[in-house]
Every structure is written in C-alpha cells, then in structure tokens.
Length: 58
View (cartoon, rainbow, N blue to C red):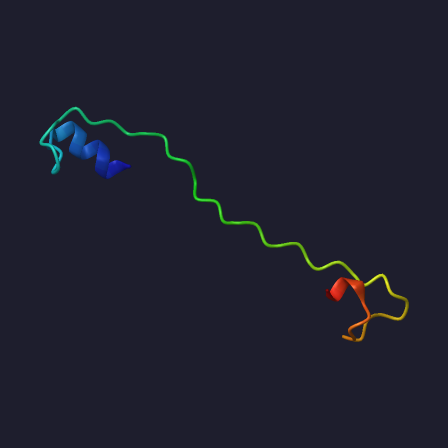
C-alpha cells in the first residue's frame, strides 16, 4: 500500500496505458473451497464390512 501511495504522489504513469489517473479498488479476499462432507454411516446393523449387500455402497 505504501508503494502505491508513493507512486501516486510522484505522478508515475501506468505502464500499460500511460495514464496518471489511477485509483485503488476494493478486492474480495481469496476464499478456499469448503471440504466435502464425510460419507454417511452405514445404516445396516453391525456395519457393512465392504460387502455388496449394503444399499450405501451402490
């Protein structure tokens, strides 16, 4: 921020367009994606054990 203020005060032109009328813009922070929810527990009694009979495995 101090670098911008110094260049603005000195009147240093924009390297892209040569303009001196530049201003800071409000920027949104970068927010990471949320983690996926854990898989639901198997409703079968005694757990699935990885067998093919569990409806949650289809």
